[in-house]
Length: 181
Image 1 (tube, rainbow, N blue to C red):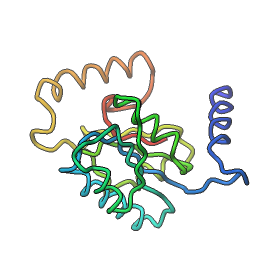
Image 2 (cartoon, rainbow, N blue to C red):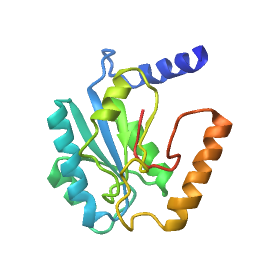
Image 3 (cartoon, helix red, strand yellow):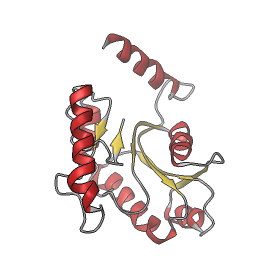
């Protein structure tokens, strides 16, 4: 545990500005590839969360080459667009993480499948010292039709159970796309 804490502190020290201070408390990161249909509502929800929680923060759209005007929507809404040339979901996340200015990062998809309106739980747990906070769609967060029945009743619960068994942790939804660290 001490080694992990040391590595975490080293990583966090690298995220500070030259004066040694974090520039913002929270970066809300959304990877994006042609999400024009849902991007605006996601950004609205994220910005509302920052206002309601009275948090100095930013919304980052890690754009992976959208061709549908997503970048213009994000800019108009007040989000910071970070172009990520390397293709793929993981690359978009990494590009956004590297660009983030917050002490904490909460990430979620820009397709409106996750609720950016209620980030207080994540922020509070991160402030308490948790290194990772995971969402759990099985606690009332799965919209009708949002997850195929095979995934909802078999795949995700079984894989989450296996993960909990092997890694001895309390995560209730190993595949939830909303995570804070």
